[in-house]
Length: 382
Image 1 (cartoon, helix red, strand yellow):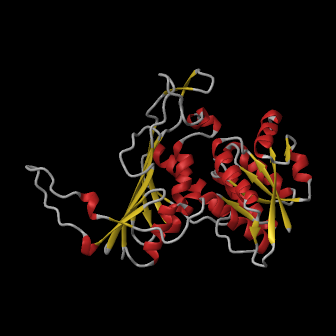
Image 2 (tube, helix red, strand yellow; image 1 turned 120 degrees about the vertical axis):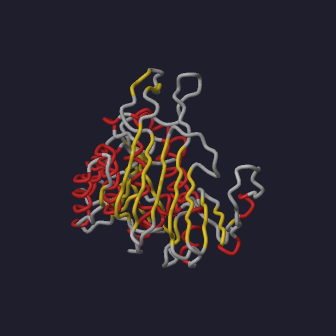
Image 3 (cartoon, one colour; image 1 turned 180 degrees about the vertical axis):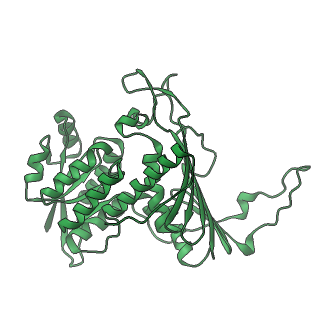
């Protein structure tokens, strides 16, 4: 059995722990590794690294992880570990990835890769020059709902795509009346890398680029709807960055996308994120896992009449797209793609260049808000 050593940094946070450590890396371990094209099994051997030794030791014991450390430099110096992964804070990420590249490690990371476009570009260019493998998480492309949208698109179901409407978000509790917040307080502090524009426009860049057309221009309005919240220590603090974003995008090919992102919205839709795609031949609505479609021959013909109650149950006029295959956890699926890219040189389209594109759109979104105008999204040079 072959072995692949992976250094995991920042896996004590919610996303790093649940999606990357437990549901991806440890899931590979528990299934006996990854079967390579040669038929050989690849053992995944992680080492978890963090500043808090007590947390690292507790995590290692809980999940029977053989290796843990508080010494990142020593971990990077170990030639037996090939990949460095980071899911820590945005403000530390570029420096950590640069250090890992200097140590000769392939790098994989959460997004955003930075809060500064020039830093992101420098990092992507460095990774490209190094000849090492590099990648950024693009998890929403691997959601079953969006994979069904891609299937409809590839089949020609939509005809010409006209528009995309996205709704993302939920109510994040303020923490001041007995219900604790379900997101960390740093999300609402600009100096800590917070803000929903920086967080979510990076996601919407790769979703739109890969599914519907390259983003060519953006208009974005941000808001800080909830000005004060309660932190993890029970103390009140000022929120000095955006908790909602209302963005419109022009896409290559002429489609228009509108995506609302908010941590101050109550959900009355099919899922925490939904995308409606309207085309000349058909439309579809997708959430995280499910997708509904309506072809032009099945489209009802409503007539505007405010003087009587609506007679059409519009939800019943859509057909659910069935599960025609088993979908694995999206993070795990992308992890396997990256591991195969490293070990077998399999195709991989999500390098740090894609991460830089996400940072670019977030930066332009913030600038659009500040200047209250549309901005073009120029091509980046790597």
